[in-house]
Image (cartoon, rainbow, N blue to C red; front, top):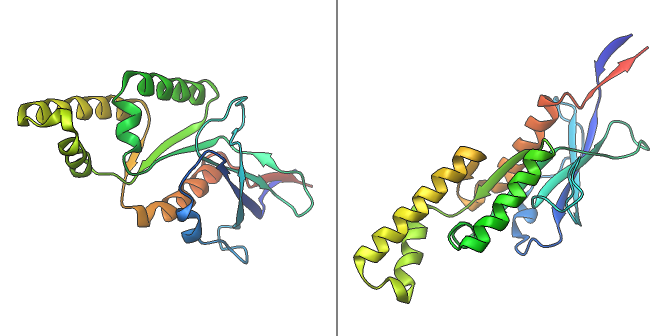
Length: 192
């Protein structure tokens, strides 16, 4: 028996709770198989439950099949999108931070490849802090930004966080899907 690389069809799964779906309009879907034999054909809005997860985990995952008509398989990829002020509001209040770390723990327990993609920069965070009424003194703003940076570093030590411009999100999502397929050798099957 030999192992051969098969064509693989992919459908992105986007969570029903994801509020901003503008990035989906910018994801390039494939009409034919590329040289890597991967064809990302579309997306579905569903409760994202990657391989091994009973609860919704992440905002984006994917399912795949090797042949037309085959059953679909879940992947072990979970991508959490943190857009605009969402990253700040997730890790700064204690309740949000605890909830988010429970989700990260679920991903780790299930053995997921878990990534966070955010389109907010530290400069944006600083500007948002300046707008808060409770932060009208410069020393409070600096302390608050320092606390955010410390929490952000702690998060980065636990899970990969990609901070990038929104325009690159669709390309990075495609690349993470292809990396996951390659890393886990999802395209290979036994042939007679």
